Image (cartoon, rainbow, N blue to C red):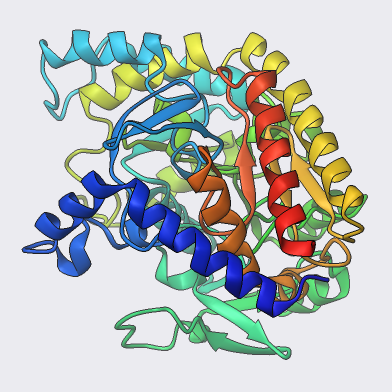
Length: 448
């Protein structure tokens, strides 16, 4: 493996290189620190591991430029928000057109039926609703599932990703459920109503469902938040059978796994869930998310509504399904997230995965390369993880930090949270080859 001393040397060298190369970003950071808490408009902007925040000037397709004039091959793509490229022309045109006609009116527009038809055709579920974020969509889905089943318990996986939803912030540490240590200001113990198990463990799933009190299993078809964890053969089909047998609603959050294919992991590989959530990329980068559901779930939702008092349900916000979001989503679904886009992205992601694996093998490292469609990730570990605990144990923060900073200083951006990369319709073979060559030189410097 790679020596700690080599990692420390690279971090020191690359931090100095970044400081000297980005004076404009440094100056903007000092100005921003006057009134932005911690110096940034939102705290995730500090997660890149740079000595001070990098400031963007513009982005287009698969390329980003910073305020100091540096050009980057962008494989982060807004951590999936720009998964189909920065400012896709059809989306940009739709936004400009709608901006002159009204941004939000709390009314539908002519885009509404077209968006609903596109969602139903693409993902196979007949009924849909729009929210502003996937976090909001997941909160709505959790409420509906608890309401229509009359059950209180939610089941999630250790290390899961479902946005900023309090109910899912439960981890397993040495097999013991605990509140996620990063959760701020939580005043009640969500473990009272949330159960957590490991991915790929059918015995644990059966045991968690057997009491008959689980309203919904909220899951990604492949885990993406704790590194990438792929489902073992037959696992998802068994999940579908078990949830049906125990009367538990199955919810797929495909905000990240939409990379699998045009209809997400669900349409590419199955099985069909009862409810489906998609956020970030669905409107080309405009804040927007959707959740879909079966006709049976829709009927149960209507029955629940008839039982209650009409009025505030705790679901939705004023800007949900605003005119701008609908216009952007229509353009993205019909003109950007096309079969032709995936026909470019998926083979190029295969090439990226193969190139990275070759580079890693050239340096006699055991690191696996995993990918879900257009999403690729390498792990600084000896084997692919089966679950969240194994994935968390495999993380090497200092090494990942050094690699990310090295790549950034040479014009390559990957996701700052772990070694995740996305290929978009605008990504070129030259960019893929440049990423592989830069990683090759990085590992050469770390192992020489």
